[in-house]
Length: 200
Image 1 (cartoon, one colour):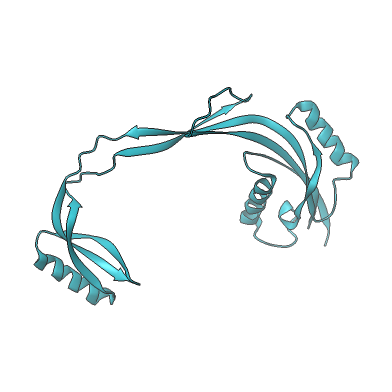
Image 2 (cartoon, rainbow, N blue to C red):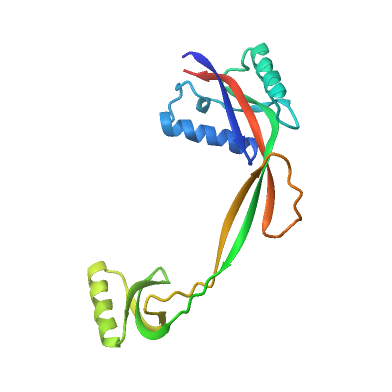
């Protein structure tokens, strides 16, 4: 068993743990969970060795020098340097009113009944006879109980959706001067450097 040094850079709006876990997942997808694959996935998360409020090229060079001066850290530990904020992500949820005109009709609906839960199928009919025949066939084929109920359903490909909510993301280099709103959040984007010695 040997060791190889690594330096990994991650930019994220999440925590340092989120950033570390994303690297682990990435390398485990590529190399599996082998104990000696020579990547950060063979290490556990260490501690913060250096921290900056805001990212700059100068601070990045200081971080690189720290890593070299400290011989790339420890074996099997991924220590990290917080390089600071590189920007801001503004997440705004927007609302769109949908002009659908739902068309409801009374139908006989076939549902599957499992574990005391009624799950609707895509089968509904004008007459109870048709619905009963379908429920009988489905029960015979699947061995699962089915029931027929009388209820209103959407017909003629109409839709009942009346609103749509979607996310609009924008990235800013500096923190934007935006009023607080219940449909918006502002997240700092941070950069981390992970370093250490991996098993190989």
